[in-house]
Image (tube, rainbow, N blue to C red):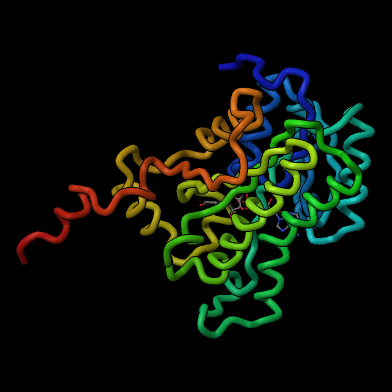
Amino acid sequence: MSTNILKGKRGIIFGALNSQSIAWKVAERAHEEGATFVLTNAPIAMRMGEIKTLAEKTNSEIIPADATNLEDLDNLVTKSVERLGGKIDFVLHSIGMSPNVRKGKKYTENDYRYYMQTMDVSAISFHKTLATCMKHDALSEWGSVIALSYIAAQRIFPDYNDMADAKSLLESIARSFGYHYGIKKKVRINTISQSPTVTTAGQGIKGFKEFINFSEQMSPLGNAPALACADYCIALFSDLTKYVTMQNLFHDGGFATTGVTQKVIEQFGDE
Ligand SMILES: NC(=O)c1ccc[n+]([C@@H]2O[C@H](COP(=O)([O-])OP(=O)(O)OC[C@H]3O[C@@H](n4cnc5c(N)ncnc54)[C@H](O)[C@@H]3O)[C@@H](O)[C@H]2O)c1
């Protein structure tokens, strides 16, 4: 259902890889709600080609950028302002990748070159994006920036590996940059801590299927689907949430504050 809540707003959406991606759903919803935006992803993801379908569907331009590369980000931010015809009102950072997870390295035996890459791609890229926007004064006053996180930033989920450390850093960057950008331009910066969701990045985590079932049973409302996450992003990009900033917002069906549910406890009955 569209209410045109983002009519006239301009955005940059990072991280739409395929139709399962959370960023893909955000792009579809933002388009339905009247926004115009640039789609971006790492050049390697572009070669897979699926993003072109989304660009056609949402009438948007694609500008490739490796989010760890400052030159790419400079080009992305300046061109986006130019092509969209004005300052940017919203940014979605929907990026995550851990070579340690990909290569099956245990957390206690992480390769440190990989570890640095995990931090750079999954967290520091958020700082770089914000710093680039600030340098070019590319964001509108009351603009809204969101990055996607996961509760492993606060609690241990062993197979999430070094991504947990990256998410802690990501959430901290949202707070710190949220302070500075808030004072300077009234830009709001938040992270959304999403339920486990079936996507390419999600499926990279060991034991993901079992884990998603556990999470479903531990959440009073069940796991939040990607489309519902997109709706939440739209709400945060809109003018109806102008004073929400520097927060980590759980979008997880109640998982974060549930100690146990009846469904789970019943699995531990008399032997
Ligand atoms: N799927 C889940 O269970 C889940 C849960 C909570 C949070 N998240 C977070 O949501 C975000 C989106 O992930 P997703 O689940 O939609 O998976 P996804 O695999 O569809 O998206 C991850 C994206 O990151 C992009 N990316 C990787 N390296 C990049 C780089 N150097 N520069 C630019 N882009 C790069 C990929 O190309 C891809 O588009 C991630 O931050 C992820 O950690 C996912």
